[in-house]
Amino acid sequence: MLLYIHGFNSSPQSDKAVQTAQYINQHYPHVDFHQPQLPSSPHTAMSLLCEITERAKQQGQTLRFIGSSLGGYFASYLTETYGGKAVLVNPAVKPFELFEEFIGPQYNPYTNEHYQVLPQHRQDVAHFDTQVIRHPDRFLVLLQTGDEVLDYRQALHKYHSCELHLEPNGDHSFVGYEQQLDKICNFIQL
Image (tube, rainbow, N blue to C red; front, side, top):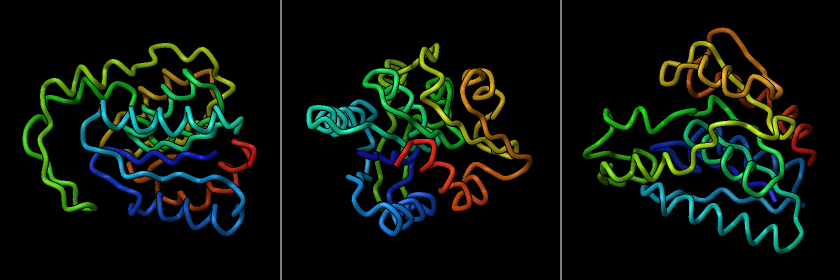
């Protein structure tokens, strides 16, 4: 099973998500690939991700995750909790510390959804924090120093024992992501 987890205010229609789906479909059509649209509530989103993961684990499938931004934060929790391997792309490290600027009305341009980020969502997200990575061999972390949304140095610090791929410049979307897909698939052993 491969689960692609998009970030905050994103969707399976984002560039990275579409590129990933096309690559997997073309090169690994046999893989049980999931790319859900996450609900705007962090608790509900994680419930959906855990349900998909638990079902795959019960079926004896190897667990694999690709997570971008907030999706990388969620993928860390899933990998540390259930096992498997994960590739994190410009992952959020402490998203609960950034919540003040997002509380209130939000709009997801991919889904056309208007919704509210509530103060409770901060605690919901903090609940899934993996303060220490106990299994660094399970992670490949792709970072670009030009990330304008998240401080890449937080990820360097948290994932210092993991396999890291750090590129200068770029941005939060991870410029040239499609060129990393072969490396990503090799790491998660498709």
